[in-house]
Length: 331
Image (cartoon, rainbow, N blue to C red; front, top):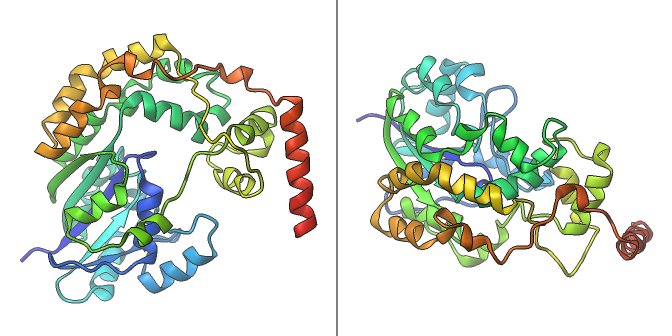
């Protein structure tokens, strides 16, 4: 019997952090078999649940996720030996990294799965491209000097970057990929992922795993005015500030204008209809009923704001000063 591995591939901004936090901190009990979450450290070695929990408890994010270049920078023989040493008979490892989704060529060119002697089930979660871009803008691209606004990002050769169906299709040619599972984002991605493998969980456990919640508008305005405080991939700054700053409004500013919304929906309409064919019946229904995949009118209730117009008001500056002072005094 061939050995198995489950690879959660992302996509990014579709609940990966919450899933990784859950997997890092909970036992995986299933009547479908035995599963164990493993992670890869920066030295290209697998680490076990005990080490993961120790590290994640000291980590600001509360989880251990990934080493994105596993297929190109890790020694497959070492990974294979680690898998054999860390797993008991019949135990299936689960690894997760939202950065793997777009790296099929690295896995394929290096015969990575074949070299570690594993047959892989790869799992992808997707969401409407327009919603993804607004979220990703505040996660990364607003802090990237190469893009002035989301329209510029989209037009600078990024069409393929969010063509979910085409990206997933590239995994069909990767040797030792046994099964591709595609799901649409639900209100509880953790519960949905666990259900694929009949892994037991409780609502309390899943609530504790909620992570990577969008920063408040006031924090985003502060960082937009002082971009030197925040690197492109340094979301820890957001988390740190969000622990200090508390505001009534928690909705991320909407920065996708109506013209770009229509362009994105039209660009991916045919590809998204092919994506439907990859889903099971229940998730096909979810995708068809979510109008944000298909109609620009689904975004009519959102108030567009130019990224350059996000400036702190005097009242917001006063609120920040007060909350920072309170935080310092409590320290």
